[in-house]
Length: 273
Image (cartoon, rainbow, N blue to C red; front, top):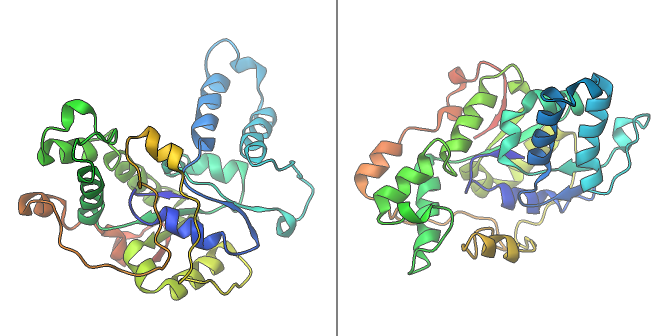
């Protein structure tokens, strides 16, 4: 799972986890970054001659499987393999690697109107009167304009993911994407999960959208000085509110929902919007 932040990936993972066929689904993990760090050792430097394609693939595949405590079973039918929903924004930048290591795998991309993503970030930052959240570097916390600039910068929590999403969406692997619009998920959870189930070839399941259970990663959020960052409401639904962003920032971010336009989907991604 990948896509944009503050767009329902934790909620979707909590819903998917209700399906007994899904062995693992949760918040962000270090699996993709670990793989990327290992690939740098394999393709450059003094040790690059020690790896051929078969060993590279075996080792990298083992990172994910061993992280979840699953033995590699190359001869087992796909139907018997456990279904893992790993969560990291980096997957959008490694579509080719995912397709090579796990043929037939899909990357779920949770997306949302950029206005409401940045608004969500700002709301959770403002919950702390000292503005201590590490989401934004301390030198950028002075006012809402500098905080927004940091969030949408190329290495910021939104800016990086926005670029990664565009990379995946227009790549040769776009057909492996399942793009899930947050507004569709919270307003039509049943219909959304039906399409996701078909795309992932999951067995049918009656999901309970009124009793969502998710164990909040309090230590992870506390490390970012942002308690409540991954809180999931117990009931799926939309909640109307006014933005806390000034109108000029809203105008600057408006019009970013390109995935809702079928003419801008040349790679054939599955889009649920």
